[in-house]
Each structure stands twice: as structure tokens, then as C-alpha cells.
Length: 418
Image (spheres, rainbow, N blue to C red):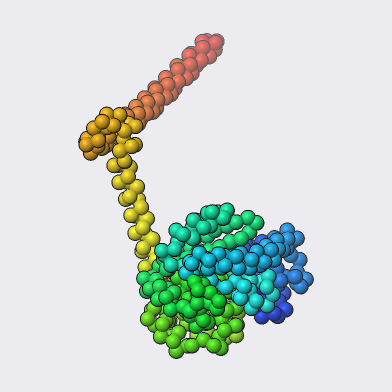
């Protein structure tokens, strides 16, 4: 994907805002409607609002308003999520639910302005055995469950409280799942809590980089995730235990990719250092902006997990299609009894009626096919006869026209005086 100027200028705006610098004016024509769509797609439109506030550009008023509306959403979100996080933390402790929070209250403080925070949920890590307990709790407190693969199990409550709960199954890679399980058991308890745990900066770095890698492989990675990681990185980078991090990343087989992704993020939002392999980083940028639609081949070369995810999804689709076919061919007894009431007293005959039903369906399909072929044959015969009749009519018309001309010629000859 050859990135448009809108994509490049979007990163310029984000970098300027996050580093508290004045945003430069665009150097050429900019499609502001397109820029908003890209920013909104990656959930960073509220940050762009800060970048365009001081621009003298003639930005269409409807577009300015849409950026402002996203900013207002982020303003209202902060206190709601802070309050929700505190309440759930207290309740989970009382109910003795072992978990850890990716503290929203902490990360929001490290943004230049709190309203710039890209995190949209209270995020809670669980053990798989507690998933049903937590689900029952949220259903009993007027939360609505939203189905999503990208954020685990997402719960929503009016006017805007959102909670994302996940466990080791959020990761596609088996090694990452194992990492999550081991990490969970090694976490220390948060101060004054017996069941709420917390990660130190090094553990949190490993968790975030695994989640970014997993999202990248699935084609779900967004700029809001990247900015959230960068804010965390910028805040705690000096206290990371890099030797331990490198060792763990090698065991997870994502060390090379993590290095490339980290370098790209720093290039976008940090130092802006030059690069050597331009093609590779262009492919990564295209992959991120398109959420996996473009730049896939080059990305897969240094992150084989991309290919594994694609292959798994393909297998899952085929397996789902096969499962649906089997269910259709061999429906349950209750359904079959609605078609064949005799089964209510003779359940042992269910396999026989399956065969009978499939036979009837096969006969019906064959009959329909014969009927279609017969109708098509009749249609071809009709068109053939129609063309034949048209040719006969044309010949008769030509013959009559010829006779008429001869008769007229004879009449003209008879009128001539001898």
C-alpha cells in the first residue's frame, strides 16, 4: 500500500500532540474527511482534535465538529472508567476473585493531557475458571455483554462504563498462553489486597508486547494501542529489566518482531531516527494502517505467527462449514419428530428416517434439475421456432413485395400507348 498524504500527516499530528509540540500545517492539499475516517478507524480522533485546534487551515466545519465530538467522548470517559475500576476492584476483592487490572487510573496520568488517553475500557485479567463467575456478576449488575474477539469479553453499561475481561485464551499462540498462565501465578498481591494482583513495569512490558504482537498477527492492531504502549514505554522505560525481557522474548520467539515494532513506534512518536530497511518498515506501516489487509507478505517473513493465524482461521471456516453440513444432514430427534410424527414412539428408527429424508431431498433436487433442464429445452425450442417463423415471414414478405413490383410494372406497361 502506497500510503497517502493523509496517513503520513496523521502520524505527524499524533507525534506533535503527544510530544507537546506545535503541529505543522499540511504542505499540500489534504482530504480532511479521509483523515477523520482513518483517525476514527484507529480510535485516535480525539487526539487529532488537539492537533488541529491551532491550525489556520480551512478545515470543513462538519469535520471539525466530528473531531470535537470524539474529544467530548474522551472527556466524559475518564471519570466513568476511574469510578468503575475502583468499584469493580473492591467487589472482586470481596468475592475473592483472583485477577489483575491494567490500571486505567495510573496510565491516564501519564498522558500529556488526561483526555488524550487512548484506553477505552477497564481491563481485567482473569483465570479461566473464574470467567463464568465474572460473567454472572456483570449480568446481575445491568451490564450488557458485547461479543468481540479483539478485546476478550466486553461488558457495557449505560451511560458509558466499559469493562474488558480476558484470560489466557485471548492469545492465539500457545507459547503466549503459557506465558500468561505463568505470569498470572507469579504476580504479587497489590498492597492492601489479597486477591487483586499487579504487575511490575517489566512484566507489564512483556504483557503489552505480547498483546501487540498477537493483535498484529490477527490484523487487529490499531494506533490507539500503539500510543497507549508508547506512553507506558516513555514513562517506565528507564526501569525495565532488559536482560530478562530479551530472554523471555526469545523463548516466545517474537524477539525480532518486538524489536522491529518497538523501533517503528519510536520512529513514529519518539526520536524519529532514520531506518535502513525502508521496504520492511513501509510494509509494517501499511499493514497497521490497513489492519492486515496490505503488507502481509513482508510482515509474515519476520512474524510467522501471521501465517499460522491465517491458516487457523481458514481451517476454522472449513470446520464450521462441515459442522453446519452435518447438522443439516442429521438434525436432532426433536426436529425430525416435527416432520415424521412416528418417531415420537419409535426413536430407534431415527437413523432410518435420516436416510429417508435425505433420499426424499435427493429425489426433489433431481426432479427440480430435470424440470429446469426441461424448461430450458422448451425455451430453446421456442426461440428456435420463433426464429424459423421470422425467417418464413421475411421470405413471404420479400415474395409479396416481388409480386407487387411485377404487378405494378405490368400496369405501367399497359398504360403506355402502342
